[in-house]
Every structure is written in C-alpha cells, then in structure tokens.
Length: 114
Length: 115
Image 1 (cartoon, rainbow over the protein chains, first blue to last red):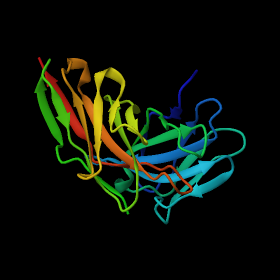
Image 2 (cartoon, rainbow over the protein chains, first blue to last red; image 1 turned 90 degrees about the horizontal axis):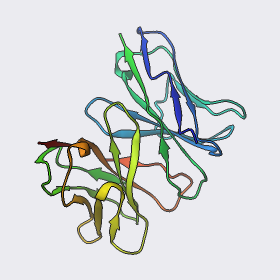
Image 3 (cartoon, helix red, strand yellow; image 1 turned 90 degrees about the vertical axis):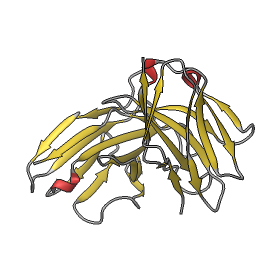
C-alpha cells in the first residue's frame, strides 16, 4: 500500500509567482488535512477537506491561499503571489473517516520563495 | 482554545541512557493526546496516542507515555535510547468532539543521541 504522496518534494518560486502543492491520500482515504511548518516551529493546521468539500479552513490565511479536493485526482494547495514568508514545509495528512482515526502524513513539500 | 507546550527544544543524551521528553497541554475540555516522530526530510509518524482508559500508553520503538490529568502532562519516555532514535518529536492534541480532528502541535523537541 502506497502511503500519502506529495509532490513536488521541493519547490522554488520567485516572489509574486504561484505555487501548487499536490497531495494524493492513502488508498481508500477520503479525508485530507494540510499543515504548515515554519522554520523553528511546530506544525500548524491549515485546512481539512473531504471529497469536493472544505470542512474546516480556520487555519488558512485569508488571502492568496486556497485548497481543493476534487472528486477525481489529488488535493491541491494553491498559493498565489507568493512572498518570502510563505517559505515553509507543507505537509498533507489523510485519514479513513471523520471520527477519530490516525492521520497518516506525507513527506511534505518544502517551498522556498526567493 | 487548546495549546501544547514542549519546553525543551533540544535534549542531548548518550546512547543506552533513559530519556524523558516533556509535554504539557492547556484545554478547558477533554482532549486526545499524541506523540509523533519526524526523521530528517520525512513526514510525521505516529508513536503513540491516548484516547481513554489506562493512563500509561505504550507505543512503537519502545516508547511509552503517561497521561497525567491533574498536571495536564503527557511526557514521553524510553528506558534506553539508540542512535537511530535521533529525530524531532512532536506532542499534539485534538478534540474528541467537533467536526474536525485537526491536530494542535507543540513546537517539537530534537532528541540528539550521542555515542
């Protein structure tokens, strides 16, 4: 069984460009979480999605950030007009159901904004 | 709101020595508690979790943790560490009730095992 897949693993963008981060959950998982890890900090929750629905986006910055989890294909975290402060590791996790089950984490995407 | 505090940013220890990584949390309601490990350039792996029941929880790789409600703590312990235990360790909480199971993390503790 493949685990949670994220790509790219490393992404370099210049200020003002767009960043698209992809997450394929584990087989059979329909719940996806995105977390951000800033340098020297712990992981911070950003958004929780189920197929085609955003359930909780309380951790998402109000502007420039969006997330989707379409019926077919991976979940996408999109950052428009990136700034240096967006440089971080972005982790995706998936779980089997809405009642508590273990969240399985991907290897992360490390975004560097020049 | 809930929060998690890991006071030790780094814990150096010699191989085969015991270790304790501290975690305290703040919450006005009951929480679930977790410890995750992150090896360099990898994602997080669940070490152990406390949902209910016995306050002493055993996890993978010989780790265990004890939930202490009165002290709002969930310290992680291992009686004898190996070089391969060198990694970042994160304590986290989530709420049993509510629409999401989002995890709230501490800032992490780097366990550095020396030969």
